[in-house]
Image 1 (tube, rainbow, N blue to C red):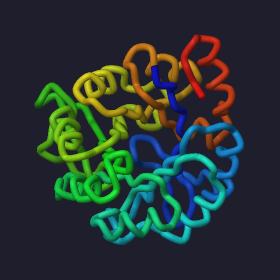
Image 2: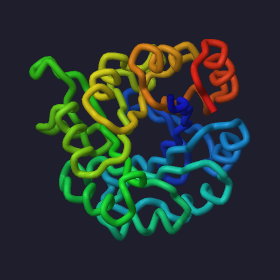
Image 3: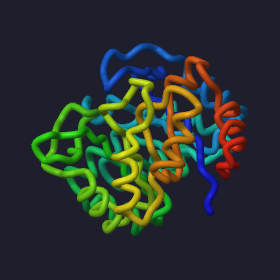
Image 4: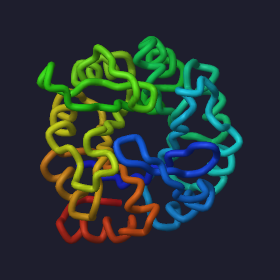
Length: 252
C-alpha cells in the first residue's frame, strides 16, 4: 500500500499567501518563502503553490517567487496558476518545480495535458479540478478561472478525460467545502477516486486532524491537502501525521 501524503497548499496572490472561504473573502496568511521553509521542516510530504489570480488576470505564474520557494525545499513541489502552454511548464520546472498543475487552461484546451505528459512524463502533470455540486445534473460540475466560471463538464467525466490524456494525478478541490473546516467532501473524493487509475489529492474542508483520517479511511484518497489550518497553526503537519499513525494509517 502506498503511504498517504499530507500536503500544505500556498495560494499566492500579489506575492503573498492568502486564504478564503469558498474561493472568496481572502485574507493574508504570510510570506510564501517563510511558509515553504516551515513546512519543509515540519515534515510535509509535498508542497503545492497556486498562483490563484494568474488565469483571471491573464498573466504568467510568478516565476521569481517560485524560484525563492523552491530554494527552501527538499520535498516535491507542484506549481500551478497561469500555465497555458508547454513553454509555461518549462519555465516553472526550470524555476524549481517538480510538477505542474493545470486547471483552467486544460479545460479550455485539453491537448495541453497530452503535450505536457508527452514531453515531461505523466508523473509531472497534475490536473487540478475545482468541483461544485449542481442539482441540475445531480453531480458535481467543473469550474474554471479560480472558481468563477461554470463549465459544461461533469467532474467524473472530466477526471477520466484528463487521465486518458495523460494526467498523472488529480488535485480535487471541493468548492462547497473550501475553507468551511467541516471536513473533506467524502462523496466527491470517493467518486473520483473510484473512476480514475491515478492518485487523487483531496482538497477543501480540512478543519482538524480527524478530517484527514476520514478522507483516507472513507474515500481512500491518496493524499490530502490543506491550507488555513496549517497556516494559522490550528494544527500542524506533525500532529496530523502522529494522529494518523495512531489510527494505523501508513504515512511517511
